[in-house]
Every structure is written in C-alpha cells, then in structure tokens.
Image 1 (cartoon, rainbow, N blue to C red):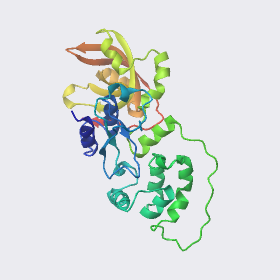
Image 2: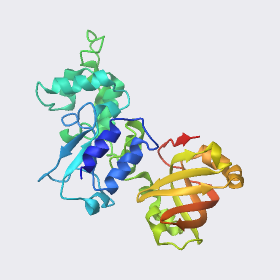
Image 3: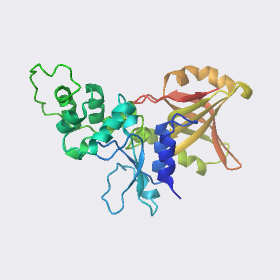
Image 4: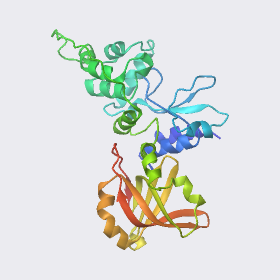
Length: 308
C-alpha cells in the first residue's frame, strides 16, 4: 500500500479526470497522507514523496484527520514549484539547479542566487516557501520588491534605489493561509475550506458528508459543500449531478430538471451550496435528491469541473 506515491502521480499528471488537485489533496488527508507546502530547500519541480520517519510533525492538521488515518508508513506529499502561480518549468528547474550549490539560507540569498521576477517571488513567500527561515510571510511580501532588485534578472541594477523597512504586520491566520493556497497553488495544505463554516452549519442542522451513511433512506437531510464536479449528461433527460466536498468527504447530489431550472442561478454563481432533499441509500450508494439549493459564498474561489 503506497498512498503517497499514488497521490504524487495524480498531482503530477494534471489535468486529468473528474477531480482537481484540491480535491485530490483532501482525499489524501482523509487517507492519512499530509500535503506539505512548497519549500525552497525541500521541493522539486513536481510533487515528490517525502519521508517523515522520526521527524517532528510538520504539517497542518487542525481537524486531526491525518493523525486519525495515519498508517505505519510516514511518507507524505511535498508540492512542487510548478504548482506556484507565476512559476514555469524553467524557473522551477532553476531553483532546484541552483540548490545543488548549497541550500538557501535566507530569503535575500534566494532572491539573489535564483533571480526570479517579483510576482513568483511574492507568491512563493505567500504560500510559505520561506517559512523555514523564520520570517513572517507578510514581512517577506513587503520586501519582495527590494529583494527582486538585487537579482541578476533586474535590468536596472545600475540604479541605486532606496529600500523600505517593513512595518510591524500581524501574521497570517489559518483562513488567510488557506485562501492563499487556493489562489496561488490550487492545493490547500491545511484545513479543507468547509472546516471554517462548520460551526455555523452545525447550528443550522446541516450534516457532514460522512453523516449521511447513518441516515434513514427517504428522510429529509441537509448537507453542504464546495461544488467540485457538475455533470449534465445528454442522456440523462435534463437531470444534473453534483459532487460536493466538505472536510469529511464527498456527497452526491441528484437534481431533477424542474429543480435545476428553479435554482440554476445559484449553481451558476456560487462555488458552494447548501442542499436540502431526500436521502437515498440504495445498494450501498448514498445520494441526496435535491429539493432546495441555497448559495454559500466562500472566502476563496473554487472552480468546479463541468462535464456534459
């Protein structure tokens, strides 16, 4: 059983199939495999397996999902540089190639040795690629412009430009880090986005995806999740099928043609929905036949994959 290697293969062969890298990452965590963030001294161009035997825990696991599903093997997935917005294959190889001359010891040294443009340098800082140096991400973001000017790629090195001292800035909280993961790499390394809405959803009686298996066939249930797959098969006579994801897994939603016409605007405009409908459990297959769909606006943009 080699789960980490399996998820590495999926991430390195995108785009493919129904599911986005974010969904693959969520499934990995639910199988005890951590998704480790980009790191200038540990990442490669593409995702790799990384052994953590006898090493301290280095991954975000606020929901304890990974620890609960951990097996005897302690291999995790390290995100590759090519997943960072603004970094192409050439830049990723340049980072890895320069590292053969010795590990990077600071943010400024990295900027000087590699010579990235400002955007990829900022994005690396925002997703935590320099966290091992112990400097806050916001402070590095402030300094990225000045650091970029010291690199060989800056065409105006002859100009003597003043540097600016970063003010005291608060650290990024978990929600902000998650939003940046979705925006810059598309792969959350911490909590799944629905985790941040769970307390409010629970007060409203909204179930988790994992709770549906304990329900009674035909009963009315409410479930919520980010829409990750939307299917409109031509042979389905107007039926629409959704796959929605929360922090515990996936839920399958069946939408009748009349219901889809009524709530089409909700599905077209929002990345998450709260679905109320009849629970169906047939031969071990669990789904919800939607009767009502309400929009749930998320703090990060998540694009569903659509299939006709």
